[in-house]
Amino acid sequence: MNYQKVINEIYQTIHNQENIGQVASYIPELSKVDPSNFGVCLRTIKNEEFGAGDWQTKFSIQSISKVLSLSLAYKILGDSIWKRVGVEPSGNPFNSLIQLETDNGIPRNPLINAGAMVICDILISHTENATNDFLQFVRKICSNNNINYSESIAQSEKATGYRNIALCNFIKSFGNIENDPATVLDFYFHMCSIEMSCQDLTKTFMFLMDNNFRTPENERVLNTSQAKRINAIMETCGFYDESGEFAFKVGLPGKSGVGGGILALHPNEYCIAIWSPKLNKKGNSSRGMKFLESFTTKTNSSIF
Image 1 (spheres, one colour):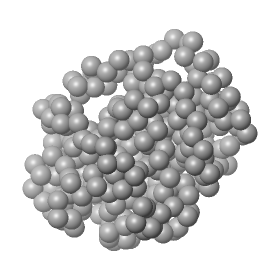
Image 2 (cartoon, rainbow, N blue to C red; image 1 turned 90 degrees about the vertical axis):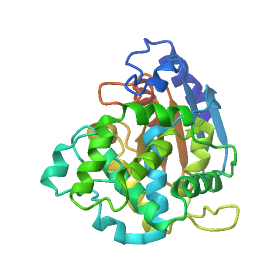
Image 3 (cartoon, rainbow, N blue to C red; image 1 turned 180 degrees about the vertical axis):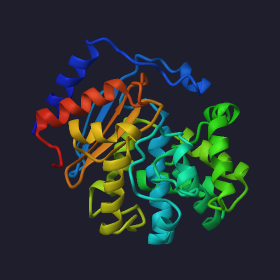
Image 4 (cartoon, one colour; image 1 turned 90 degrees about the horizontal axis):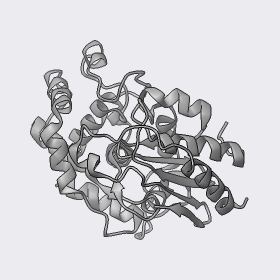
Protein backbone atom coordinates (compact mmCIF):
# COMPACT_ATOMS: atom_id res chain seq x y z
CA MET A 1 0.00 0.00 0.00
CA ASN A 2 1.43 3.38 -1.07
CA TYR A 3 0.07 5.34 1.90
CA GLN A 4 1.83 8.58 0.95
CA LYS A 5 0.22 8.60 -2.47
CA VAL A 6 -3.24 7.91 -1.06
CA ILE A 7 -2.85 10.58 1.63
CA ASN A 8 -1.64 13.18 -0.90
CA GLU A 9 -4.51 12.47 -3.28
CA ILE A 10 -7.23 12.70 -0.62
CA TYR A 11 -5.58 15.71 1.00
CA GLN A 12 -5.49 17.67 -2.27
CA THR A 13 -9.06 16.73 -3.15
CA ILE A 14 -10.43 17.91 0.20
CA HIS A 15 -8.13 20.95 0.34
CA ASN A 16 -9.57 22.11 -2.98
CA GLN A 17 -13.15 21.85 -1.70
CA GLU A 18 -14.94 24.49 0.35
CA ASN A 19 -13.75 24.51 3.97
CA ILE A 20 -17.14 24.33 5.69
CA GLY A 21 -17.99 24.44 9.39
CA GLN A 22 -17.23 26.70 12.34
CA VAL A 23 -14.26 26.99 14.70
CA ALA A 24 -15.11 26.24 18.37
CA SER A 25 -15.56 29.87 19.37
CA TYR A 26 -17.20 29.07 22.73
CA ILE A 27 -13.63 28.62 23.99
CA PRO A 28 -12.24 32.08 23.14
CA GLU A 29 -8.62 30.95 22.68
CA LEU A 30 -9.63 28.32 20.12
CA SER A 31 -11.34 30.99 18.00
CA LYS A 32 -7.92 32.52 17.37
CA VAL A 33 -6.67 29.46 15.45
CA ASP A 34 -6.27 29.84 11.68
CA PRO A 35 -9.24 27.89 10.25
CA SER A 36 -7.30 27.03 7.10
CA ASN A 37 -4.92 24.72 8.98
CA PHE A 38 -5.10 21.15 7.69
CA GLY A 39 -2.70 18.36 8.53
CA VAL A 40 -2.56 14.57 8.30
CA CYS A 41 -0.12 12.01 9.68
CA LEU A 42 -0.18 8.22 9.47
CA ARG A 43 2.11 5.84 11.35
CA THR A 44 2.21 2.12 10.59
CA ILE A 45 2.87 -0.87 12.81
CA LYS A 46 6.40 -0.85 11.35
CA ASN A 47 6.82 2.77 12.54
CA GLU A 48 6.75 4.15 9.01
CA GLU A 49 5.53 7.75 8.93
CA PHE A 50 3.61 9.62 6.23
CA GLY A 51 2.40 13.22 6.45
CA ALA A 52 0.75 16.04 4.52
CA GLY A 53 0.01 19.70 5.18
CA ASP A 54 0.28 21.03 8.75
CA TRP A 55 1.04 17.61 10.24
CA GLN A 56 3.86 18.87 12.50
CA THR A 57 2.02 21.93 13.85
CA LYS A 58 0.85 21.68 17.46
CA PHE A 59 -2.79 22.30 18.38
CA SER A 60 -5.05 21.77 21.39
CA ILE A 61 -6.15 18.13 21.26
CA GLN A 62 -9.05 18.78 23.66
CA SER A 63 -11.21 15.65 24.12
CA ILE A 64 -8.74 13.32 22.43
CA SER A 65 -6.92 13.58 25.77
CA LYS A 66 -9.85 11.78 27.43
CA VAL A 67 -8.67 8.48 25.96
CA LEU A 68 -5.27 9.04 27.56
CA SER A 69 -6.61 9.92 31.01
CA LEU A 70 -8.92 6.90 30.80
CA SER A 71 -5.95 4.69 29.89
CA LEU A 72 -3.93 5.95 32.86
CA ALA A 73 -6.85 5.40 35.27
CA TYR A 74 -7.43 1.93 33.82
CA LYS A 75 -3.73 1.14 34.23
CA ILE A 76 -3.81 2.21 37.89
CA LEU A 77 -7.17 0.84 39.04
CA GLY A 78 -8.22 -1.81 36.57
CA ASP A 79 -11.86 -2.78 36.19
CA SER A 80 -12.98 -0.99 39.36
CA ILE A 81 -13.28 2.25 37.34
CA TRP A 82 -16.41 0.85 35.65
CA LYS A 83 -18.27 1.11 38.94
CA ARG A 84 -18.25 4.88 38.50
CA VAL A 85 -18.62 5.35 34.75
CA GLY A 86 -20.45 3.33 32.09
CA VAL A 87 -19.45 2.11 28.64
CA GLU A 88 -22.62 2.89 26.65
CA PRO A 89 -22.96 5.48 23.86
CA SER A 90 -24.74 8.57 25.12
CA GLY A 91 -26.71 9.57 22.02
CA ASN A 92 -26.63 13.12 23.39
CA PRO A 93 -24.27 16.11 23.03
CA PHE A 94 -20.93 15.81 24.82
CA ASN A 95 -21.90 18.33 27.51
CA SER A 96 -25.45 17.13 28.21
CA LEU A 97 -26.77 17.05 31.78
CA ILE A 98 -29.97 15.15 30.99
CA GLN A 99 -28.76 11.57 31.42
CA LEU A 100 -26.97 12.29 34.69
CA GLU A 101 -30.33 12.88 36.35
CA THR A 102 -31.85 9.60 35.18
CA ASP A 103 -28.61 7.63 35.75
CA ASN A 104 -28.02 8.93 39.29
CA GLY A 105 -24.78 10.70 38.51
CA ILE A 106 -23.11 7.81 36.66
CA PRO A 107 -21.96 9.14 33.24
CA ARG A 108 -22.81 6.92 30.27
CA ASN A 109 -19.17 6.63 29.17
CA PRO A 110 -15.73 8.10 29.95
CA LEU A 111 -15.42 10.04 26.67
CA ILE A 112 -18.21 12.55 27.26
CA ASN A 113 -17.41 15.53 29.47
CA ALA A 114 -19.14 14.15 32.55
CA GLY A 115 -17.38 10.81 32.27
CA ALA A 116 -13.99 12.43 31.75
CA MET A 117 -14.53 14.48 34.92
CA VAL A 118 -15.12 11.30 36.92
CA ILE A 119 -11.89 9.87 35.46
CA CYS A 120 -10.09 13.10 36.45
CA ASP A 121 -11.47 12.71 39.97
CA ILE A 122 -10.18 9.12 40.09
CA LEU A 123 -6.70 10.24 39.00
CA ILE A 124 -6.63 13.02 41.60
CA SER A 125 -7.41 10.44 44.28
CA HIS A 126 -4.80 7.94 43.10
CA THR A 127 -1.80 10.04 42.04
CA GLU A 128 0.42 12.45 43.93
CA ASN A 129 -0.19 15.31 41.50
CA ALA A 130 -2.66 14.44 38.77
CA THR A 131 -1.88 17.40 36.50
CA ASN A 132 1.84 16.69 36.55
CA ASP A 133 1.58 12.89 36.59
CA PHE A 134 -0.79 12.85 33.61
CA LEU A 135 1.55 15.06 31.59
CA GLN A 136 4.50 12.81 32.43
CA PHE A 137 2.47 9.77 31.36
CA VAL A 138 1.72 11.33 27.97
CA ARG A 139 5.32 12.40 27.49
CA LYS A 140 6.51 8.88 28.29
CA ILE A 141 4.27 7.03 25.84
CA CYS A 142 5.04 9.60 23.12
CA SER A 143 8.78 9.71 23.96
CA ASN A 144 8.58 13.51 23.78
CA ASN A 145 9.34 15.75 26.76
CA ASN A 146 8.31 18.85 24.81
CA ILE A 147 4.59 18.12 25.10
CA ASN A 148 2.91 20.66 27.38
CA TYR A 149 -0.37 22.14 28.49
CA SER A 150 -1.48 25.47 27.06
CA GLU A 151 -2.07 27.68 30.08
CA SER A 152 -3.88 30.29 27.98
CA ILE A 153 -6.34 27.70 26.63
CA ALA A 154 -6.86 26.13 30.07
CA GLN A 155 -7.66 29.52 31.56
CA SER A 156 -9.89 30.41 28.61
CA GLU A 157 -11.89 27.22 29.18
CA LYS A 158 -12.04 27.88 32.91
CA ALA A 159 -13.35 31.41 32.39
CA THR A 160 -16.20 30.32 30.10
CA GLY A 161 -16.85 26.71 31.16
CA TYR A 162 -20.14 27.29 32.93
CA ARG A 163 -21.77 24.10 31.68
CA ASN A 164 -18.74 22.02 32.65
CA ILE A 165 -18.81 23.62 36.10
CA ALA A 166 -22.50 22.69 36.34
CA LEU A 167 -21.78 19.11 35.23
CA CYS A 168 -19.05 18.61 37.81
CA ASN A 169 -21.14 19.99 40.66
CA PHE A 170 -24.16 17.98 39.55
CA ILE A 171 -22.13 14.75 39.65
CA LYS A 172 -20.79 15.80 43.04
CA SER A 173 -24.38 16.06 44.31
CA PHE A 174 -24.80 12.34 43.55
CA GLY A 175 -21.55 11.49 45.37
CA ASN A 176 -19.67 10.39 42.23
CA ILE A 177 -17.06 13.15 42.54
CA GLU A 178 -14.95 12.62 45.67
CA ASN A 179 -12.63 15.63 45.49
CA ASP A 180 -13.32 19.36 45.46
CA PRO A 181 -15.05 20.19 42.14
CA ALA A 182 -12.74 23.20 41.63
CA THR A 183 -9.72 20.90 41.80
CA VAL A 184 -11.29 18.39 39.41
CA LEU A 185 -12.22 21.12 36.94
CA ASP A 186 -8.75 22.67 37.02
CA PHE A 187 -7.21 19.31 36.10
CA TYR A 188 -9.91 18.70 33.48
CA PHE A 189 -9.35 22.06 31.77
CA HIS A 190 -5.58 21.53 31.74
CA MET A 191 -5.95 18.01 30.39
CA CYS A 192 -8.05 19.27 27.47
CA SER A 193 -5.56 22.07 26.74
CA ILE A 194 -2.63 19.75 26.04
CA GLU A 195 -1.01 20.53 22.69
CA MET A 196 0.28 18.02 20.15
CA SER A 197 0.78 17.75 16.43
CA CYS A 198 -0.70 15.04 14.23
CA GLN A 199 2.76 13.48 14.31
CA ASP A 200 2.77 13.50 18.12
CA LEU A 201 -0.69 11.95 18.26
CA THR A 202 0.21 8.98 16.08
CA LYS A 203 3.27 8.31 18.24
CA THR A 204 1.25 8.65 21.45
CA PHE A 205 -1.51 6.24 20.42
CA MET A 206 0.79 3.46 19.27
CA PHE A 207 0.12 1.71 22.59
CA LEU A 208 -3.47 1.05 21.51
CA MET A 209 -2.52 -0.06 18.00
CA ASP A 210 0.54 -2.27 18.67
CA ASN A 211 0.20 -5.23 21.05
CA ASN A 212 3.99 -5.23 21.49
CA PHE A 213 4.28 -1.53 22.40
CA ARG A 214 6.63 -0.70 25.27
CA THR A 215 7.60 2.61 26.87
CA PRO A 216 11.28 3.67 26.86
CA GLU A 217 11.46 1.91 30.24
CA ASN A 218 10.23 -1.30 28.56
CA GLU A 219 6.86 -1.11 30.33
CA ARG A 220 3.50 -2.07 28.89
CA VAL A 221 0.87 0.65 29.16
CA LEU A 222 -2.16 -1.65 29.14
CA ASN A 223 -2.60 -5.38 28.76
CA THR A 224 -4.24 -6.77 25.60
CA SER A 225 -7.69 -7.04 27.17
CA GLN A 226 -7.60 -3.46 28.46
CA ALA A 227 -6.41 -2.10 25.10
CA LYS A 228 -9.22 -3.99 23.36
CA ARG A 229 -11.78 -2.42 25.66
CA ILE A 230 -10.43 1.11 25.20
CA ASN A 231 -10.63 0.59 21.43
CA ALA A 232 -14.20 -0.66 21.79
CA ILE A 233 -15.19 2.46 23.73
CA MET A 234 -13.58 4.68 21.07
CA GLU A 235 -15.48 2.80 18.36
CA THR A 236 -18.86 3.23 20.05
CA CYS A 237 -18.44 6.50 21.95
CA GLY A 238 -15.53 8.46 20.44
CA PHE A 239 -17.56 10.96 18.44
CA TYR A 240 -20.38 11.81 20.84
CA ASP A 241 -23.77 11.68 19.12
CA GLU A 242 -22.06 11.16 15.74
CA SER A 243 -20.33 7.94 16.85
CA GLY A 244 -22.72 5.72 14.91
CA GLU A 245 -22.20 7.80 11.78
CA PHE A 246 -18.41 7.53 12.16
CA ALA A 247 -18.57 3.76 12.62
CA PHE A 248 -20.88 3.50 9.61
CA LYS A 249 -18.79 5.65 7.26
CA VAL A 250 -15.23 5.15 8.56
CA GLY A 251 -15.20 1.93 10.56
CA LEU A 252 -12.29 2.61 12.91
CA PRO A 253 -11.93 3.24 16.65
CA GLY A 254 -11.24 6.93 17.10
CA LYS A 255 -11.64 10.09 19.10
CA SER A 256 -12.31 13.68 18.15
CA GLY A 257 -11.68 16.99 19.88
CA VAL A 258 -13.21 20.44 19.42
CA GLY A 259 -9.74 21.76 18.60
CA GLY A 260 -10.35 20.12 15.21
CA GLY A 261 -8.28 17.01 15.75
CA ILE A 262 -9.29 13.42 15.07
CA LEU A 263 -7.24 10.35 16.00
CA ALA A 264 -8.22 6.96 14.56
CA LEU A 265 -6.47 3.62 14.48
CA HIS A 266 -6.58 0.20 12.90
CA PRO A 267 -5.26 -2.31 15.46
CA ASN A 268 -2.01 -3.93 14.33
CA GLU A 269 -1.89 -1.78 11.19
CA TYR A 270 -1.76 2.01 11.66
CA CYS A 271 -2.62 5.17 13.61
CA ILE A 272 -3.82 8.22 11.70
CA ALA A 273 -4.38 11.78 12.92
CA ILE A 274 -6.07 14.65 11.09
CA TRP A 275 -6.36 18.27 12.13
CA SER A 276 -8.65 20.89 10.64
CA PRO A 277 -10.24 23.40 13.06
CA LYS A 278 -13.63 23.95 11.42
CA LEU A 279 -16.23 21.70 13.04
CA ASN A 280 -19.53 20.28 11.85
CA LYS A 281 -22.75 20.64 13.85
CA LYS A 282 -21.84 17.65 16.02
CA GLY A 283 -18.51 19.20 17.06
CA ASN A 284 -16.25 17.04 14.89
CA SER A 285 -13.76 18.27 12.29
CA SER A 286 -15.57 18.58 8.95
CA ARG A 287 -12.47 17.94 6.85
CA GLY A 288 -11.28 15.25 9.24
CA MET A 289 -14.48 13.24 8.89
CA LYS A 290 -14.36 13.55 5.09
CA PHE A 291 -10.72 12.55 4.97
CA LEU A 292 -11.15 9.40 7.05
CA GLU A 293 -14.21 8.25 5.14
CA SER A 294 -12.28 8.57 1.88
CA PHE A 295 -9.14 7.01 3.38
CA THR A 296 -10.76 3.81 4.67
CA THR A 297 -12.70 3.49 1.41
CA LYS A 298 -9.61 3.84 -0.80
CA THR A 299 -7.43 1.60 1.37
CA ASN A 300 -10.22 -0.89 2.15
CA SER A 301 -9.09 -0.79 5.77
CA SER A 302 -12.19 -0.61 7.95
CA ILE A 303 -12.11 -3.03 10.88
CA PHE A 304 -15.43 -4.45 9.71
